[in-house]
Length: 634
Image (tube, rainbow, N blue to C red; front, side):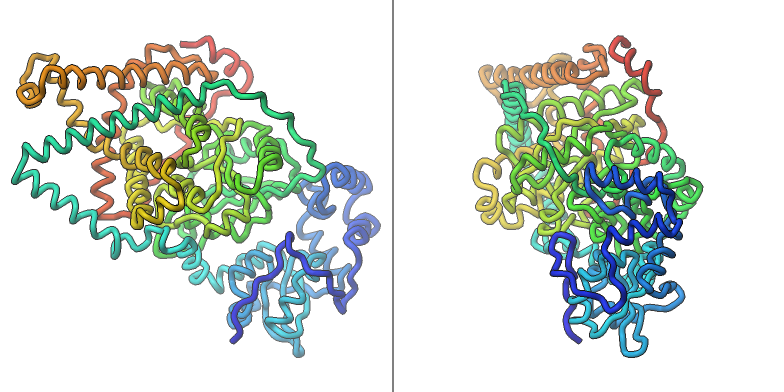
């Protein structure tokens, strides 16, 4: 059997080849929709007006604006192209024919070989006007072909039913092995428990020596993290030239948005309302809601929700793992846009976000492969934990990330409000399906291959995780991902050094290794509270007075830096939280230490376990007056 051949994407179309069936122009078919009575003249003229403003296909515009139903459009296509209608769920597709093309290519092109009929292979499509783009590749792989029509949803369901196992395996293995943690249990991951065991053994045999080494490392990483935070803050606050005006874009690109849901009972209606506020042409907006095959809860919730035609629900077939990046890898082949965005279930993006994103990519070079939006919370005053989380996010997204970008360092991405050039994302092999912080890992992989990520000046509000145990579980997943990401990329330090360069290499060490070390070794630093309480501490008999004063100065400097950065960052938000809350952060971060021990344990026992965060407990406040009063509330 010949190997699968790639079909042509919209960006790489061969010269159209005339079909043997009648092949009218796209405009001719669009006009026939009105003349044959499928759409009203008003809807047709409105669609023409939309097309004139930003391009697109008339049928897509009509569908997105409810000018025609999907069933009526399919009927009109079958009549106009004289193509038979088939039900691919009843006619079991020939797997050998699918293999000749490749299941992933079938998903990407929206095509499905059904079987042979009268010496020709029937290939189902929902877009007959684009069939000619693929005909040459299809005939090279399959021989003579005949176009038949079927609903896009039926083609997708039949492909997954036939090739679900293989598609799931492809989604899990998409990223390169050398940059994936999927061999953690049998390869590099074996060293982690060995190192932990040796460390415990050494501490038992030489407790004072090991304690001194751990204290020295804790102080060194504390100094490194503090200096990086100061440098990033100064870089972020440095005066920058004014941003250029938004470029005039003659033709807006199609944007695909993927949202992975799992066990979400009542988030769907709110999610739809928030997405509906996005100001972007609906015929150019392609939203995929990804749900797991076994997730009946979310499927039932979505079944009760009326979805607009620009939103598709995609069921991800079962596999050996169940993670968000695996679902994203599966959905990537189904995306129709040249730009790919990622949102979370509880996100409320600002309406102009996609237009800002398109403009940013338009004025950037191809090396800018990713844009990270600013994340904030819509429930900052729920309780003390939500206030602390809000302050932490303010420092990270308003000061540190902009500073890291201006310093030219590679930085970990957030898991939502991410936008990619599709070509770069596919060149990297998508996401590492086994990494529980696929976003942080992808930020480093982008830098390793010469790409850049930049900050997008647009805010997405989401729900602050403000219950103690769920917060610890969420943070343990993040820290486990940081540990795993550092371990994977440090399998070959020399190669990483060559790819990143010295500056980004050491930045990577501070951002990942030093951050994890600070959480794990936090109790050693907390022990110095014994001294002001008048209790004995081992270092008082070992350190000289000068060394002890330097140690105290480092602790004071760290606290001053953290509080100062928090106060500066809070002024860049609209929340108006009382500055006194910043003083309580000292009691917030110990929860992170608890999460780090859970993360270290899971690194040994269940490295790929995805500790899911539940959403929808604290919804967004009403728009309007509540927002305007927020700045005056304390």
